[in-house]
Amino acid sequence: MTHSDTTVPRAPETQSAPTGRLPLLDVLRGVAILGTLMTNVWIFTGPGAEWGALQSGYGELSFGSFAGAVEGTFSVLGNGKFLSLLTILFGVGLAIQYGSAARRGQPWPGRYRWRALFLFGEGTVHFVLVFAWDVLMGYAVTALFVAWLLTRSARAQRRVMWWAAGLHLAVLGLLTAATLAASDSEDGGTVSREVVDLYAHGDYLDQVAFRLENAIALRMEPVLTFFLLVFLFLLGVRLYRAGAFGVDETGRRLRSRLMLWGLGLGLPLNVAAALGGTELFLPARYGAAPLLALGYIGLTGALVDRVRRPGPLMTGLTSVGRTALSGYVLQNVLCVLVSYGIGLGLAERLDDTGPWWVVGLWAVVCATLMVGSTLWLRRFTAGPLETVQKWALRH
Image (cartoon, rainbow, N blue to C red):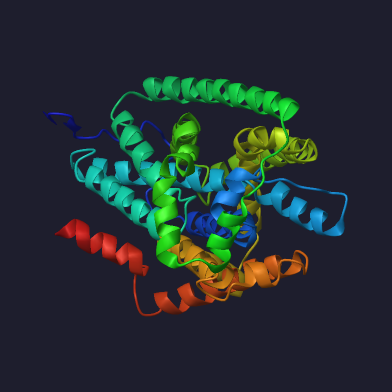
């Protein structure tokens, strides 16, 4: 039975896909949310903030100094890795919702399309009012495509998945070649004093206007990485259906493989890419990073498997994972208020003090989110933005 382009979904083509709530997924979401801040915190605190990251070579590192080594370590461990992890988990969530619709006999994509469109709206507001490097808009567009793709056969999904990977690598290769050619012909870009002053002293509405005026340039990341997003979404679907997040022996075996291959290959590749300089930034963030993200899934799973009684850390990560959308937006709002001139303006005031205040800011925001989300969930069943989304989609 079909209704135009809406289909009653079949049960997922797997024998291992779990049907109950999986605690590991909440922990992984918490890790991914806090991990993305490992990269973004350097954007908020750098000269020119959002535009500076784009203009002067996002991720430019110098391991020759102690400060450079600290930032370099953050980059090797965080840059692109937790973004890839978050993308994979978004695919997992899509597979869960598809499976739920199949069990209930509900049409698919059905109402999910409205959820994706609402997410796009949330991402647009987030981009305009808070943070130019928003990921929600790109996720919403990708989710609409992958949601439709889930109504096709498993063979078709595999074919699209690997075609997307190949196209992404082709685009990545072309962009890297262009970057190398540009580095041979001209010096690296510098951030204009006007943009630096905009974030250090400028008015909030002027910052909003600046994002809108430069929206095309600031929104190029999800466009250029669309094929990577499709691949990682579908990879998340496959991992979920294979049982990689389950509490049984199958899940533990698959996570062990992910940890072995992800860390064994991903970590050396990411270190090599980081040492290669800004010319290899794109392969590091969009090529080697997803491999290390798989290692993080395996490593986190191995650690969670060994926890008999959850302590404050695991409880906090789980709470952040259950309020992931709210946590993602809130951590960016907090960094804006601490770093920019519209708030405390610490990015300029502490610019010459070394990297430790940036590391401290990351740690304080992470602790705030873990404590705050834990307290919130004692009274409510979902995060504030999640609650608003559910309310809006019911009306």
